[in-house]
Length: 282
Image (cartoon, rainbow, N blue to C red; front, side, top):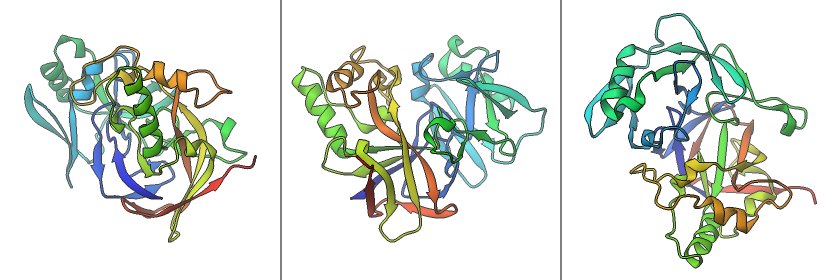
């Protein structure tokens, strides 16, 4: 098996950036989910509330985070940490400390997306205040993440997408691309749902190991076209995933596995890396 895609999402719920390699840290790929949009109550805002966020593209230069949208000129946000008082922001049930970016970003969001973006601002994770991953699935260990939904890595496989798309087509629907699931690491594997049996993934040449911790329960973001923000078929692919019942002991629709870094912090992960799986004990 090998890694066929690496994707980093510097701003939670905006477009991702396909990369060929990344520094790998315990909290995720370099720059992943370092920024997040919040409302006036400092609660996280995602495509669940505002599907149009999918139309904002993201780039990273040596000096700046650059946001772009067809309606407006791009805006560059310096990579230097902003000055200002820390804000307490909320991601699901977690409270995190964050640094507010310039109000110019808020004005830019309204110009790009219209009045629906009023009251939204951009914040940056304050990295000196760690955010712990839930302990229930860590087997006594610990892990940290930034503004991800809950885990530093999301791993998916090509075989599972192929199986899902076959089921979608059989049901009269169009196949969907992998970006609907917003993974960090895509593994080429012909065996559908094999990742549900993996305990760990290790680079064949050594260097890093990822432990798969928890199946990823999917939400309505998977129904949003990640290019146009349209919802072509309400409820799909969630309905088809539910029918496939890939996690019979769990409620909901699942696709992919949440993971943490077991070893190899500071190393490099690359597209093309050969990886070896270790199976869970029966």
